[in-house]
Length: 188
Image 1 (tube, rainbow, N blue to C red):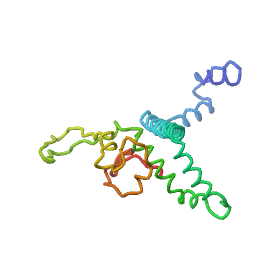
Image 2: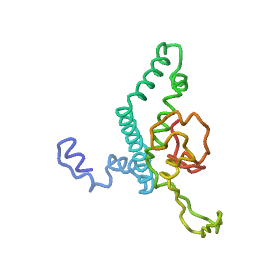
Image 3: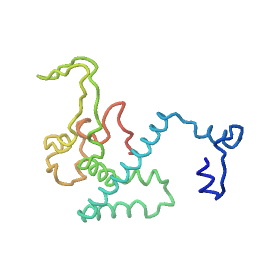
């Protein structure tokens, strides 16, 4: 507090030593957040901003390296936003089907958090010829799933092709945000 007053208001003080100071009391009440809540909130902030900025960077990269995709997006936006005074923002975005497929394809090819999707096995389980012991951490290999030709063909899964998302796929073929009740909130 003294440092804030010295740096922010350019005067010397010793308010931290005065336990009867009403400003110090109020200030400490405002900042009274236990460390777990503070860490949880900062994790959410970093997760939300870092993943968004990284996704936008990959979107920019794809647009720069695929002018045909960029043109399709531009055409779709021009066609839907032309007379936008008649539509709400949600209605406009809801009509941008190619944009939706584009973002999904970016997230398929460049998943942001592929190593944080994991679960704890709560009882011994057998899947095919494999036995997973209770207490084992299970983590899917998101890259292998996202680049599997059987799941994402017939177009080569290493080729950027947004139209592949027009076809209904297995629900666990697309895991950029995880799956199930504890998945990360998908923005669309």
